[in-house]
Image (cartoon, rainbow, N blue to C red; front, side, top):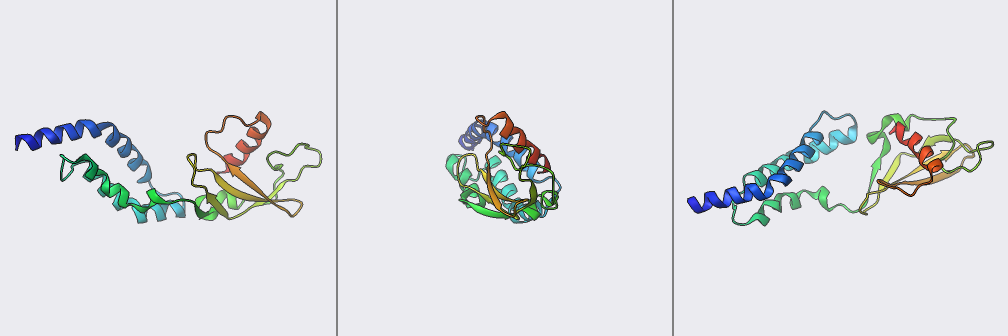
Length: 171
């Protein structure tokens, strides 16, 4: 009994920072859903995440810390590669944006700039470290323009960065 109690204490001490971080993430994902995609995510993964976190906090076998991670490995969203989302489920406000005066990001000249007429409804999340999002804008010239939105990008020119931040404001 004493040996198991010591192992539980060691496990708790070792996992404390991880549990703290995951508790924070769990509280964020458990907040009231604002979009249909968030509702789907909570219904699909909410109980599995809570159960996995509980098993991490109170492991069945504290002598085997690796077994505490097994429930997280069983939650399939950790294994997804790239996937498609529907923009109307993520940001209905962005989908409703039509016939704007906003020039497409990266346009060189403002005098005869192509403006955003609408935003495509499909968002592709790519399976790389920063999980960039690819989406399409329909330009005022009738052409589709693909854009890749990257997180934590620091080498964008200030002009392009400003244009993208205008679009992100709608997200």
